[in-house]
Length: 134
Image (tube, rainbow, N blue to C red):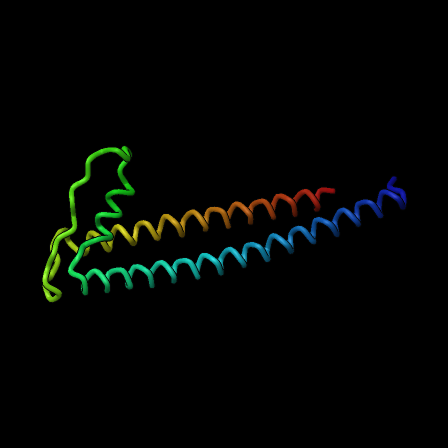
């Protein structure tokens, strides 16, 4: 038989958990909004970098991407800085491959945030089930 004190305890505990659930839902919304802002900013900055590359006739982002992806920071790198006239087309790599690489990077970032979002949803569901079982 449940007495008044335990009932009040469970009600206050339930109220606390509901507050936590509401907080986590707001946090999920904030993370989703932040994710969208960051993806937009990445796209803007990438477009800006490409614009400056074309104006300068330099292929810089390719060099940066290769340098960052190397496992050995002391390994020799090739010089990918080429002087071109402003109107020249830079043909170091297929532009569709570079676009595909950026797309895959964005997918990975999006996937990580989506995974974190799903984990938080599962945590909320677990908390909800615990509260219902009490």
